[in-house]
Image (tube, each protein chain N blue to C red):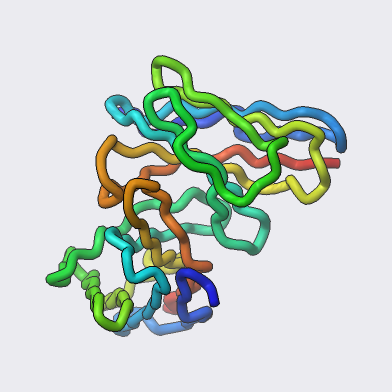
Length: 110
Length: 114
């Protein structure tokens, strides 16, 4: 079993749609959670950290369920510029090592 | 404020050669991380340096090594290059502290082995 598993996608949605990505992690001792986005052949860029209480940043909402070891990302009112691969990232402990999911590809269509 | 910078942008080598990749972290960041991303695959953790010391390494052979300098910049060295080493090598940096500090990535070095 992979340490971080994501919906493989690809997700193809029209502009203005709402889309949700899911991610599960296997290490119950995980302490930090992030969503990154990666454009084709570019470096990953931090989209948002994920907090236990859930958090929102504009059109983006992240949720964490520690009991189910599940993280989600909701994108409302999708824009063409949201097209990218979204990476679920989990970290733990003093090793401070982040484990990246394999990513979910999103294409927003005009 | 400058982000993480990596050099060179592209590097072409042949099998058996050695490659050196360089990374400068964001000012104030003391931790540097190296990742390998082969074409179509996810990021694989290589190495973590903090305060000049190697703190952790991923599941890679010893021919992957590196170091961190007193100014917190870092080098990744890959010896005896093999064809499967062709990949995008990404460097990231973060503030010191616990794992809730996000990592910020450079543009990467694309290493091609002929």
